[in-house]
Length: 514
Image (cartoon, rainbow, N blue to C red; front, side, top):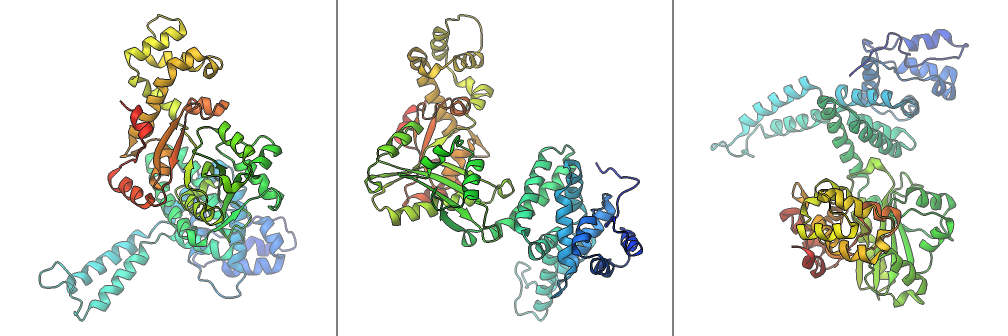
């Protein structure tokens, strides 16, 4: 995997002619250096100035030198008033951002392998901990004797083991967070790159170490992006900054915003948009949700549009429909922001609009047609096949998958009454089956279903032709789902799903299942 170059640039490669001997001394930095180059860097920065140093800094591209550089940064203790760590970390971050995909892959693999735990130190700490434990075990050898005179030594060995099990790259993350302006966003983007590299890395051994790095980085970020640090804000057309509105348009992942008029409608009367912000990245909406205030449970995007336009007074609405939730940072995948957002928004709406009694989503089924053509067609019955073939006017030996593809490829099939009469009962049955019965490791295969049911929602209703946009027809055959949040039942539903894989289901979708 590692490709070594015969002529890698030094840690600092410069065009500054006024200090050639000084910069040359910085260039000798390597994996064999006995002395940390901190003082050399200090002299270079003082001599050339921070700006010139940043311009001339380049990451070493051979693994040994790169690993040594990052170890030095990770293990250097902070000293008040010392500018060198800040400048070096800033230089590393700026240099990293300019790398191409292959170079980022090398950087991340270096982090994952060479800045993992020190195996010999872990082994020594394990031996010490095992010896200490054996000394303080009680007579029955099943529990610690807390009155033993060596308990303090045993606890210190546990602490030493715990410290040795922290990878060096976690220390590097902490340095970046404390020394780098925008360090949090850099780490979020680093994880986004890491997940992209993981998806394109072939050797299983490389994927394993990258996955371990990803796990640690996700845990690190999750501790900082917990709900206590997040700020909920309403986004409005009249009062939110233009840069924020542009991001709402750009990051919208469920129902693309085509025009500024459409954005104004989504932020206007009968609508709400809320976003979570973090103090370390105050200008970035981390996740946002669009809400419609309507008289009753919405069954389609068309209903949302019509009902909100006709709503005279928002206090006349009975239902709050979460119809789009979008995460803006791929690097925060797996960090439960959307879960907190929906609950916080429901709480805010309860306070602002006590007339609201229904909290529900109107959600797509993004993987439905893909599943249908891969394995779902096996659930098509002989009677279904006869119906579909009558619609097509075919009587050949095509299998169920091919027949379904032909029907769903018919131009504007959803507007043809004859086609709809044939396919509606089939697709509704298969849609309910997909959401409720198709599982992966015991949990709903549909990621949207898994998200909302894990949050405590009920699979309340399946809606026919809820989204007839090109995207909705392509991904979900137009089907949409209401995941209803009964606020008094959310915690119990969440517990039953996590412990027993139980998906709470409403009467309508239950009646569709065979």
